[in-house]
Amino acid sequence: MPRAKKQKTSPDMQNGDSTHPWADLPAALSEALDKANKVAEDDGQLKAFTTSNAIDAPATFGIKSSGAPNAVLVTVSNGKADIKTGSTDEALFTLSALPEQWQEFMKQTPVAPYQSYWGMFGMNIKQAGIEVQGDQNAFAHWTHVWRRILEILHDAYAGPTPEDDQPEPDEDHIVGRYTYITSPVWGKCKVFYEQAGEGEQEIVFLHTAGSDARQYHGVLNDERMRQKCRMNAFDLPAHGRSFPYEGYWPGMHTNTEDSYVGCITALIKKLNLNKPIVCGASMAGQICLAVAARAEEVGAGGTIPLQGSDYLNMERQWYDRSPYVNQALFNPEWIYGMMSPTAPLKNRQLIWHLYSAQAYGIFHGDLDFYFGGWDGRERMKGIDTGKCPVYMLTGEYDWSNTPAMSQATCDKIPGGKHQAMKGLGHFPATENPKVFVGYLLEAIDHIQKTRT
Image 1 (tube, one colour):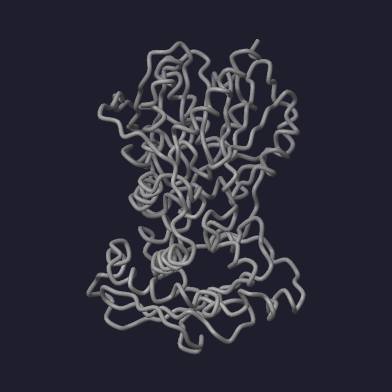
Image 2: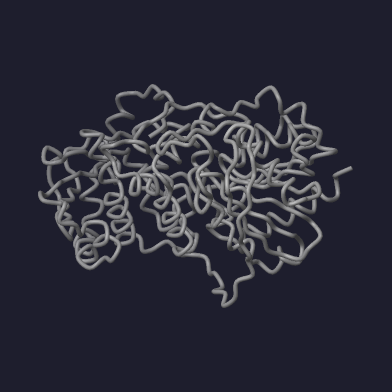
């Protein structure tokens, strides 16, 4: 997993407070363990993750508080996972955290970043006390199982986190088709795009790294957005339903500012859009900042960067492009915990599905741009928000690009605006479209009122 350099920690922080109520994790969870074991016997998700004749020998991992000798042990075999207590000597790897961190994780509705172990572990913000002990490859190999076990333990102890309601539509208003565009870097490609809405404001939606535009179906079908905007969303070349680009070799994809901006520019011209707003999250949030800096070239009339900042620099990991780890399991698991725990489960599962469905190496290649490939630190001050207003939005549960990081970037943009979004995470348009559209409409109104 991408990491920043570890913070220095005192021996007490590394070992945990032995007097804390959660210093002995099995003891703190004692009343929940039997219930968790019974749930695990019939849990549909866990059975889907563990039922395979390829699991020909049991594998055990541990979960414990830092410095404690006792652990919750989970033994995975074909079709099941048994939960017990014991010593980590039996474990291939152990998820360790400070007692106070487990206490936060086990609250019914955790605050960021305690909604997932990945969030606790940190990325650009490395928390003291978190450590994966033992076989790191096994940790990556079984990420889907230990994530589900932690969810079962959480729910057995605190009860399920309440989810937001979501209306279930009976009609879809999206029309999709293919067209050809030529990028100055990737060359010619047959790309898939979708459109919806009858409003006057044109807007282009960009998907996150390693995914596709299905992330925006909830937004494209939202009646408020259909009345306000004419919406366009497309899959980048070699992503989702788009075809590979010229010179593409499976597993060797990479993304750069010029290739990405070139695709956006080509699509705007091909669809004959007139100064559209460009909106995207994560990697696409960063490219929205690049689009604002190159607005005349692109033909953009405003940007709404979601989960964006002017620079991220972290140590890279290769589990998302490894011959020893299944990317169809690892990639969706790594990003799953970036979402709000209150988002409807159906939407979180959609994100998991989209990240499991992409081609080998696509996610890793996109992260070439997201982690260090994009550096706009000296360019934000040059954005002309009179011609291309910038309104940044950041979900509070995102531990990859936090609201504080987006605000620090926004502070450099003359006339830029930023708002943190309550109850949303790294994929706001997919997690909870009903809530996200409220923020989005505010941003669109601001751009329309301030654009000269």
